[in-house]
Image (tube, rainbow, N blue to C red):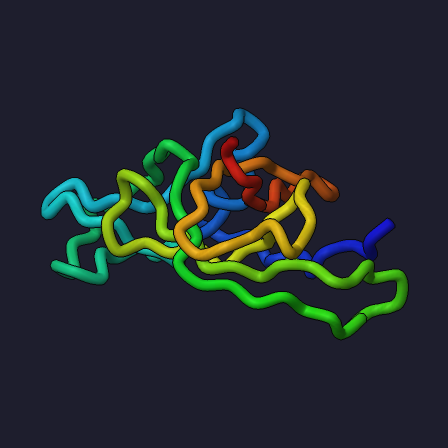
Length: 134
């Protein structure tokens, strides 16, 4: 069993991202004016500075852009090794999530692997993790 993940402080900017998994939604902020996505979530578009932004459910699929295998047990009861990856999201140009790849051996992970989101719930927070798509 792994220890609890660090709990983010929920606020007006990020609540939709951290709780969207309750409904199976990966929410990324999208600008209603220029149509660009912004992550991490902000109340202002990072592209055009518009305040007309809102959470938008994306497909929850993507490809592994970069990854590393961690062998250091940073916390007691942390199971190692595990994969830390940067996932390029489909349908949200320019958005990359740093996450874990789960449900497969670490040596089965490679660059450009197709992945999909799975949510791990801990105390009302839905952490977006990814698993390989067969």
